[in-house]
Picture 1 (cartoon, rainbow, N blue to C red):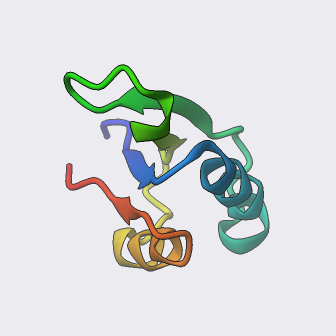
Picture 2 (picture 1 turned 30 degrees about the vertical axis):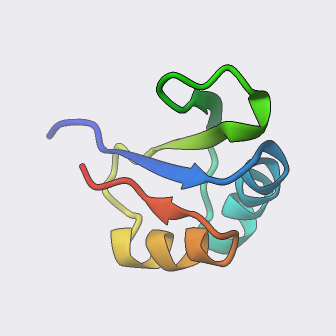
Length: 81
């Protein structure tokens, strides 16, 4: 069984941090999600950076549709695999 990883794309760091904190309560995620700054291609301005929240899901417990809806609450989305 391969490891599963979900990547949630958020508009800014604040949204990414809030979502990451909420993941444990909402989905029972025990591993600390990884936050990654994703500067848009060709953009140097930090205001144009998206933030990625990477969630490991080795047991395939998380529902992608539920994660996508959750990210949408923060004006984000689940990156397609």
